[in-house]
Structure formats: C-alpha cells, structure tokens
Image (cartoon, one colour):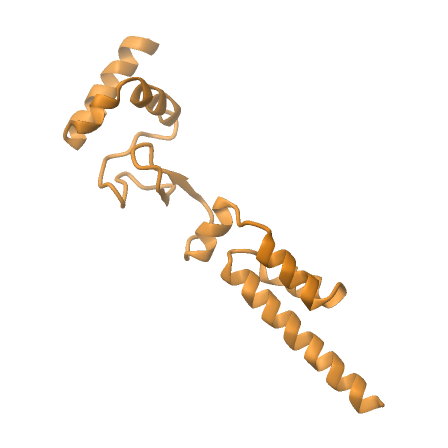
Amino acid sequence: MNTFVIIFYAIWIALAIAVGKYAKGKGKLFWAFFFGSIFVTPLIAFIIAAIVPATEVQKDRANGGNGSGRRCVFCSERIQKEALICSHCNRPLPTEDEQPLFRKVLSENPEILGLPNTEIIQRIRAELAKKYS
C-alpha cells in the first residue's frame, strides 16, 4: 500500500507540473497553476487554464515579452512601451501623453492615414495644436 501512495503522489505532481507548463505556454503564471493543481486537482486546474482567456499582458508574456507593452495608435498592434517606431506598420509613434489625443484626431480625420509617415505626425500635431491649445 505504501508503494501505491508514493506512485499516486508522483503522478499527481507530474500532472501538476504539466498543467503549470500548459498555463505558462498560454501566458499565465506557472507557479499559480502548479500549486492550484496540487491543492485542487490537476484536471480542474487544467480546465481553468484552458477556459479562462488570456489578458493582453498574458498574451505578451506568452509571445516572449515582459508584459509591459502598449498598442500602436495606427495599426493597434502590440508593441514595446519604449518604441519610437511601430515594428508592424513602421510609423513614428506619439508619446504616451499624446496617444489619446492622436486616437481622437485620427478617428475624426481618417484621410490623414494616406499621407507619408512623417507628414502624418506633423499633421496630427498641427490638428492637436489647433484644437487643444
């Protein structure tokens, strides 16, 4: 009977590790799901990891980021917080303070997006200067 208990716990821990790795692959915290599997059951922890959708930060972590990104105001793709140029659309980015105002001006003036990149920034900053000065 003692051998059975040891094998049972070894399998339980192996399944908890597997659930933790699965959750980490989806951008969630390994240790949270590992200990959740230990204390609840690996099956329930796996179902929770599979059903609960990942947040933007978790998706960023799963893709190799550190969870501290932001969205490009032009293409809405996830980029690094310190980025000066979007790695997806290659457009220069506004500062953190200017982003909400850029979104508003872009939604009001969609024709701006057809201009060259540097001209877009200049035109939007000119619009902002007129509207919010």
